[in-house]
Image 1: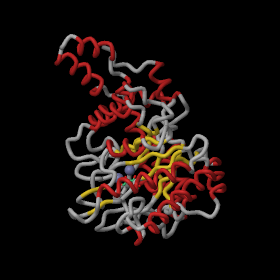
Image 2 (image 1 turned 180 degrees about the vertical axis):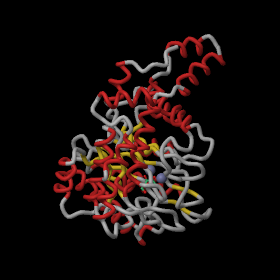
Image 3 (image 1 turned 90 degrees about the horizontal axis):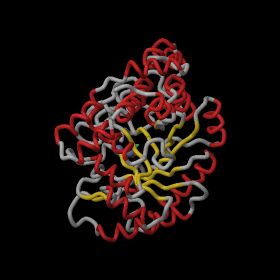
Image 4 (image 1 turned 90 degrees about the vertical axis):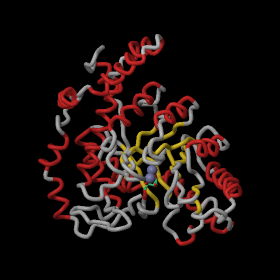
Length: 389
Ligand code: AOS
Ligand code: ZN
Ligand code: ZN
């Protein structure tokens, strides 16, 4: 058993990239209250600047996801240049069809062709944005669903969803992809049109190769074996993206690895097993909100959590595990698995960071940098950048 990170492990860790969400830098909250935080960005340019700070201190977060229309700007080429000047790129474009009166009864699944048209057109505009930003992925999460049995014809909505997605998919070009996120409930409480990986898989499989499933770790019923889903989607070649976060109860969008570090370990262990680590087909993204904690340190903590758990997953002694599994050594196999999980990789990672010219402790480096004090003074009246989904 080896619990030492090797140069090979570090080479793998050096390749890791975790995309951060623009909405993590804006004020957010629950339906009860949105708290404001000093220094909150006033526009997408300032959100990108904050995200770039996370990358500067960790070397882990080279891309920033956008949410349209939350991140509406006149000139996306200018936003792109701004990002590139700060050392980051613009990543996944997330479509928002959940904050418009017209979408009360659905968007891409709506029974009224005029509303469906509006929702499809919004996605086509998102692809225009992708053309300008150089983004590869369009991420679709739909709030579509119903609250009461009998309220809608669920079957008809699946058919309309496929028709709508066909039109959106047809507009993609080059390397662009569509990733379809599923969520078992909320805001709809009786049924959701894309509630689970199977529905997402069925819908994207009918589209084609450049349509994949997005797995948000917070979007499952309590007790779900998420790593099994990860394994299955990798096996099927359809795991396109992760939205990482953690949850205690529902779609909490808390810091990844905070609520259940062991679950994150199990998920990343399956990613490694399935060839999904540092695989361009499988985008690692955060989908989080920092309602009460400081946002930039919240994001730094998050990408470090992903890195730490990846390092532990890399320590898993696959040969010893395979031997124990093959011989029916139940406790032996479990011990191999747990040895890797329980290894504290933090000192080794701190040393390695320093050797690469990064701060050993990015959290402390941020606190000492003066960046937060500067933005607190400069930015007055930061807007609510998301509603906290
Ligand atoms: C919603 O619950 C989903 O997680 C989406 O990814 C959503 O677009 C994101 O959380 C931003 O609110
Ligand atoms: Zn999500
Ligand atoms: Zn969510």
